[in-house]
Amino acid sequence: MKISVYAVGDKMEKFYLEATKEYEKRLSRYCSIKLVQLKKIDDLQKKLNPNSFVIVITTLGKSISSEELAVKLDQNASSGVSDISIVVGANPSEYNETLTLSQMEMDFGLQTTVLVEQIYRAYRIINNHPYHK
Image 1 (tube, one colour):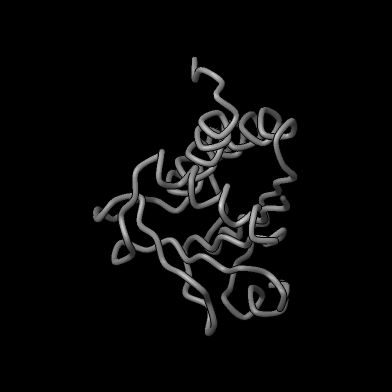
Image 2: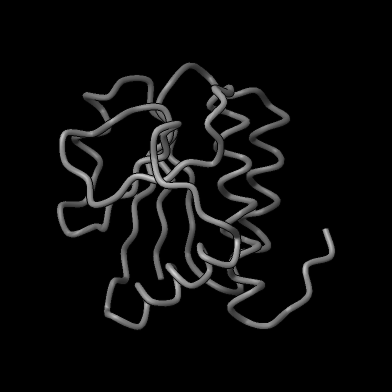
């Protein structure tokens, strides 16, 4: 599975980037994941793969549990979806689904870090590994 997380907004704080890189490293045993930082939504439209399953993170999206995210990722992989793009901080013109991490507004750096941590947690659940950190 290839997952691209597109963070659209101002420069992300260094501590968020460090946390995200740590989870990317941990996730490397389960999937290919990369963080792509963009300043404008116009840049996003150019970068999105037209064959990618696009999920937008918003405060108005569907709220799911960590276990439900694990099921969703596992089902996508089983049904042949091999490329997922998750967008934080912008709404692209075309997308497949919306999800929410919280109904509360938060900094896009924090939102991105929480998202990547939840993807890591989901893969730990999928693989029946305990989650320690």
